[in-house]
Amino acid sequence: MPIIASLPFIFNHSYVSMNLVSFIDVSSGKGDFIRQVVLNIIMTIPFGFLLPLIKNKKTNLIKIILYTFLLSLGIELLQPLINDFRSSDITDLITNVLGGIIGYILYIIFKPLTTKILHYIKEE
Figure (tube, one colour):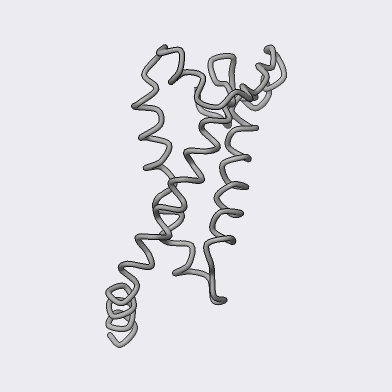
């Protein structure tokens, strides 16, 4: 069910509390933890790469970590409100921030190339 359609029923199910033990799925060997970790990292790499491109002020690693943390925290806090099958996890928060850091490192590496491409686009 789409999220918009489920809004009237958002409080009609039990709230699942956040798992505050990091990487418990990895240590217990349950679920597809490798897939989840990789997908959480991949999900926020574009955020860490593109945020410095759209900000007018100079963006540093600390700001990227803060903004990625806030984005991920918002996602994790809203997940249990959607339905009973979603839950919040501190591991997701950590891996999302790691993805933002990787995206920012890629931005630093490819900054000369992206600057040339953006300059070329603006000239046309």
